[in-house]
Length: 244
Ligand code: PEP
Image (cartoon, rainbow, N blue to C red; front, side, top):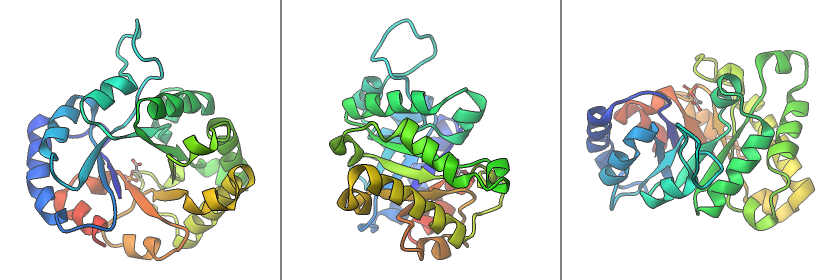
């Protein structure tokens, strides 16, 4: 159950979120809980969650270890401060910052080499869905960004299916639409890595998940978890999603 804070919350707001959030998920044992704040608040978030069942993720990284790359942050830098996860190729990064399947692949490799767990985002635009191209887009993203991983590397990633038309729009995919896309992604995984690896793959759904729709989404056996943007910003709301 992962929360993506996008470009929200300052240091003080980060601290008060975790003060309220930690106790309400303290008893949650059978699922992993991850929050991905902006870079600048990662140290505070790691500190605030020490000794708890909440892990911290970044929202992005750059694939080189270090160098003259002004404004970028590397995977080893994130790992060194206790970050455990990283979102890769979120649709907002693909749309606004020019990320591609190729850069996604480089970032996955860099994350894994530093011991970070990648949450790799895929998903179609509204125009793709309307043109009946959803599966073609998912296949292209899988082949271009993921399929060249070794089986061992593949076993460490989580995929998030996030239809772009459902992100931040209040339009959630129906459980059926989400499950169909997850099934298709799992078929891609089966084709490259075999049945066992495909079964073990965790696929999160993301796109306007809220406390009042999480249950019907999670009732789909194809949906293993959720990646939540807006509704992860309030401690009580996100806790009720985590403990749906
Ligand atoms: C996201 O940022 O990954 C996301 C799914 O956002 P929202 O839940 O706000 O649609």
